[in-house]
Length: 362
Image (cartoon, rainbow, N blue to C red; front, side, top):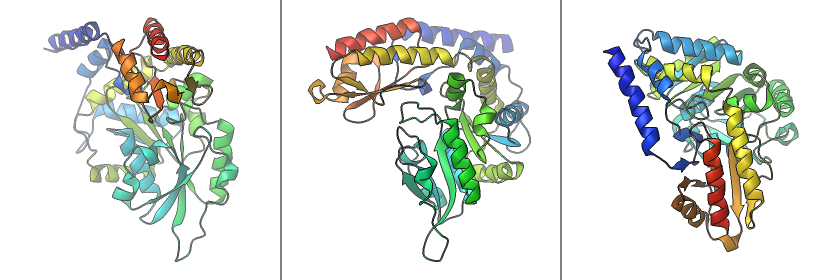
């Protein structure tokens, strides 16, 4: 029976790859499990992760915690959940956290910190998503009966709306040192931390050292279908597990999903540099097209955002031109277009996408 299932899952993946010729650059979340990843999922040893244990999920949590230099980790369905539970555990209702104004936690998670946990966000404008410690000096509110209490600093690495910008390690360390003096906790939205590691050679542990909690995603550049982990101290994760139950994030035989993440950790991290090279190829093409401007002027990892001159029409119109040539992209504003490279798009397909960009811009 298991052999039949393995053959079936492999054939499904192969068929999908043959029948879908579109070049999808909307996000690195559009990746589909490889045949090998599907085999690992089908063969995973599982149990009930909520009422007892799931050995494969346990393995993923232990490995993720070790990679990040933390005591424990907890597997959840999404990065939004790991972020929101991380914030919730650090804070109490009525507390405030500091974050960059274009951060994923603030922009793309429906204000869940307010809806679900009664928290307040204090946003600070960074440059391409990056903050300097001096920008935070005046942000901490002195605790009294009239104001919220500042409890937490949240940073994002790499920064989604900053076109995949890597948060400089020196900035992180300076903010972390300052936060400790202010008795503030630190949380990292490291959904694409793997990309920062691949681009710099700096280990996950070194990036995570300044933070009390870290969220990492397996369903973006690593290509797993579902899942994120939240890492921190043993006591922090104990509280996070209780909050996960409250949020409806408990999963039963989650080892099937954890197996995909484990496969991705083993086989898809080092290849992220290929995505970065492909993104550079896109960026170089965009820089040569009249009416298109990279935002920001350079890229660090796998996200490319560019702005259209008003004479070029709207982002939606430009995207329609791309799609007519088999390339999918995403509008981030009325005039900005985003492209994200990933493991399902080859260098040859990137060349096709570059042709489509030149055609749409002509």
